[in-house]
Length: 341
Image 1: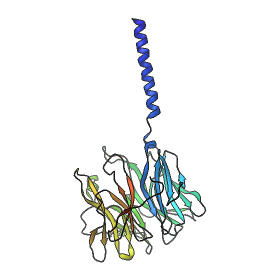
Image 2 (image 1 turned 180 degrees about the horizontal axis):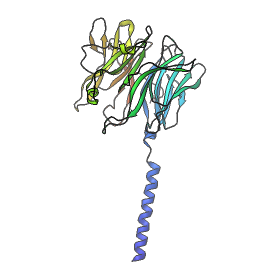
Image 3 (image 1 turned 135 degrees about the horizontal axis):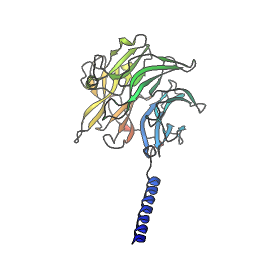
């Protein structure tokens, strides 16, 4: 009896050990499960498109119809933003670890598309979320940097907060901090081609005193004069009651194309659409009606509006597709990318 019991227990222990080994062999880390197109992209003045895909967790940076990626990263790293220079000859991008709990350090790289050379130009011990070249001074990169990565609520995941606007002079190798706002969130950074100012989307929480005040504040588009950031002003519609998210400014037509909630589906999931606001007429019009999640609008060299559509929005995994649409909202079509099946 005792011998039989020992044999039985040994067999159970062997099976348990075998299942553990099999589990380790077949269970992939979440980082290695990433696949497909992301919502990070840019469109150059030459009509080229830079975009990011993941294959088995590896980030790949592609440009237009190239068959091979310009850059591939280790599986633990991510490309969080990418932007073309004004002439389309340079492509800047940011690299950060996927696990922000491990490191918040960010590297800023520039890929020379003519020389086919990649160079890390500077790094920060904080998280940089967005980049943009100054159209007035090509040697200057503006960026948004978070002061901390934390969760302000026990039920919320850790996110970057306390944002400010910075710039880096590539020739002088000099970093400049332009604001001291420590904003809860800040995104859609754009630099004026005419004035010494930037445009961002952030909370209209000037008079907020508590976390609840911040959460209940509205998202607006601001212009920040860099010589006097305290004189910032709201440039989105003053009568717009809903939150405004991603946006692109089209100065020649005095328009803003922006993302906002367009409705809800039968399950109550928000449907995000693109809208336009005209400064001359103060009219707001809906640009898209795809009933998905349309975001990240950009003006292309062909005078069309490019944007991302997440067909998996509200589900466990995003399913991004790049679209473009005429400025009047007609003919939305999907843009085919070589690296995407």
